[in-house]
Image 1: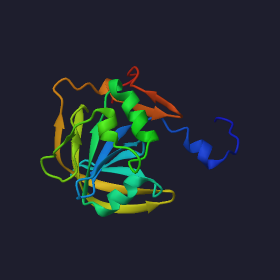
Image 2: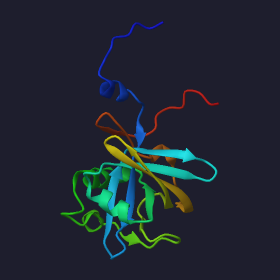
Image 3: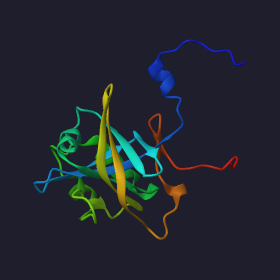
Length: 175
């Protein structure tokens, strides 16, 4: 058995392996779109496919998500790391992140929020549940439409861990 010391729970939680990083997009229904970087993202169900994103109520996107029935989750590849960082550091109250990053807010097929065509995977989600969870609110969305680039490579998907953006490493074992 490993010897352990008691530590602050916040620091222990940072021992979680890397989180996927996505760009979520939301529309306020009045023609205003926003894109946000989300590192709190998780698959909640495979059938039906339900994904969740955790957003702080202090964020501009929180207000838009509260007023919206849907959102998109867009999986960037490692070539978009600077744009992902930018979208996580700037507020949509002050800048147009779509324009600043050169993203085209592409109309979705089944929801009002746009998708980001420059990302390798686009998932259109209809909001199904809202969960208050401490300093973040989780929005669970059922994926109602998905598109993926023909050359999408999950090994180029971005992850975030303890202040660093990463990509997948070596496979050490298969199930």
